[in-house]
Image (cartoon, rainbow, N blue to C red; front, side, top):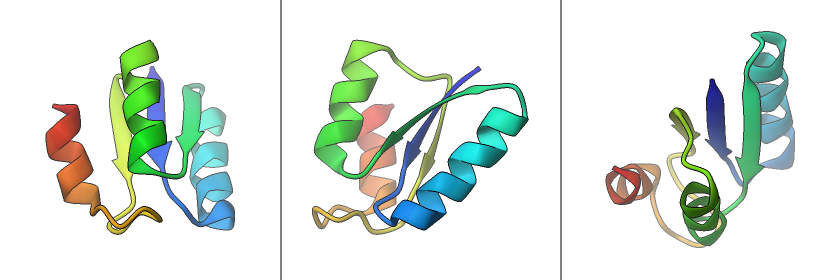
Amino acid sequence: MRVLVAEDDFWVAMLIESVVLAGGHDAVAVRSYGEAKEAVLADPPDMAIVDLRLVDGLTGPALARALV
């Protein structure tokens, strides 16, 4: 499974990514809405773990709606 991790805090992103990888899945970590959108367009993930408030001001739920 390919998992998109949208988290702007480096250490939190690293923790989530390590858990995803330990579970045997592929992880793609991004920091902003723009990066998430590019990653989804390039290779859509099977699942996304999204921060509630991203560095570029958008909320996680807004990103989730945009990705659907």
